Image (cartoon, rainbow, N blue to C red; front, top):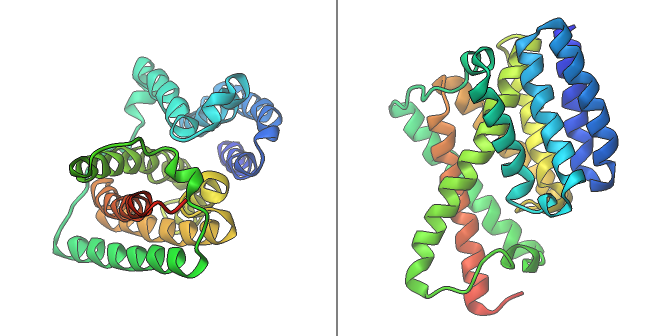
Length: 254
């Protein structure tokens, strides 16, 4: 039963990002999943169904929560608050560990950063996407503040997304399918889906690029047995994203 609840929750998380209008229907499904998980006392099923409920219900109740970063931050805050207040949930956060960052991990972080950075640059140069939806999140600031703002954005966004995809979702999928590669592919797909509407990159190409990047981060998380290595790699990619947006902002490209 645990595996079934987790699989359906994964399907719900696959559907919701494609259309905000489907949020309420998916929230109803998430409520049923959470009720089933609580009745069966399957702790990992409770984790993912609880997060899925907050992710789908919050934007339906408050439309402003559909925009980044609140579309992820608000559900994550609510989920974390519940976990912090329930000892059984708090003790079962098995993913919450740094892992090891050895020489091979450092090399992998460098290679993943190089590949992702070049891919983002080529995507931006070749397709010339409309950056105006992303530039509106960047307030006016003097040039000397750009490095600090970029670092702050990268640290925050990477921590938020890693917690959700390489943390909550990956652990739940491991409990359903075992500690193999299935969880790597599932979380990568969900990571790509999340980028479809609002991510950078977005659209069809964004979904594919983010999913492939999610595969690399998921594999790195497995290899390092913790969250620190994928978080560091994610920070580097987000700094490239910020640099692209900052360059467009300075040049007046909207």
